Structures are given as C-alpha cells and as structure tokens.
Image 1: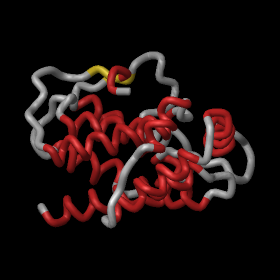
Image 2: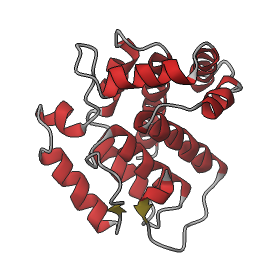
Image 3: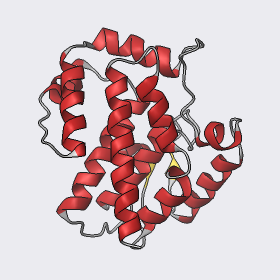
Image 4: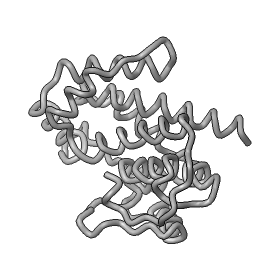
Length: 203
C-alpha cells in the first residue's frame, strides 16, 4: 500500500510502539481498500490475541477470517463499499462531516497532503478522504516511511480522522451485510479509541 503515494526521504527512527501502530493502520488501510485474498485471510486467521481490548478484537478478526474465504469476502466487500443497496457504506470524511462527496473535508485533506509533500498515485481512483487512504497515511507517519515533523501523526489524526472515522467503523461493525467486515469495524473502532486516548494523555 505504501508504494501508492510519493513520500519524502530520510525516514525517522521509530520505536516498537510506533511500528505496531503503523502495522494496525496498514492492515486497516488494506482491508478498507480491497477485499482480502486467500493469502491474507490465512495470515489473519493465524492472528493471536490476549485479554487487552486490541487483543480481543484481534482474536475476533482471526475467527472471522477463519470462517470465510476469498470469494465470500469479495462479495461482502462489494456489498459494503461498491454496491447500491441499503447496506452500502460511504467511507469518506466528506460524507460523514459534510453529508456530501468531494466536500470541504476532502479539500482540507489535500491541503495537508500538499504540505507534507505527499501526492496520490495516478492509479488510485478514490478521493483522498477515503478511510483506507487516511489509514495508509497514518501508517506512513507512525512508521516513519513518510518523512514529517515530530507530531505530524497526531496532527493528521486529530484533523482528519478523529472527527468522523470512529462513527464509520461503528457503522461498518453494525452493517447488515457485514460478517468478516464486522470484525474489521470492531478492530478499527477499538484501535481508534486507543489512539485517541494515547494522544489525549500525551497532550
């Protein structure tokens, strides 16, 4: 996923926590951008967890991956993100914050990306305020593959994810057509809560 955006050079050194954060964001970015193939489902089915909030949703995601297959996951992805039925979701900041598409929230995201020297790859068709794209940017900022000032991940999170993305993950978790993706919604909701709490404590 990270090769789909242009980035700065000289990545900063990150610690173990930031690497783990980047991995969570990268997983969410992948699952929100395309349906998982058989290899990814197999890897997800092997996830281990513990009694922590994130560990519990990892276990649930592993169980969900183990009971589905590539074809069913693809149909579910289409129904949720590409279909026109009642269960379809619009994973865009503009939809959640402005009740439109290509709205002011997208303009703000593009302004921030421009200030960071990030350019969307030509083959990417979704607007930059797509939940998967925003998680991809957060993965790069947290993991250091996007060269940015210290605190850029917190600023990006508070500006472009915090105001809406938790509501989206709740909608995904509760969507009628969601089975495997309900566990993705639970993972996203739980992880966003952890991020928000960590940023608040470090304020």
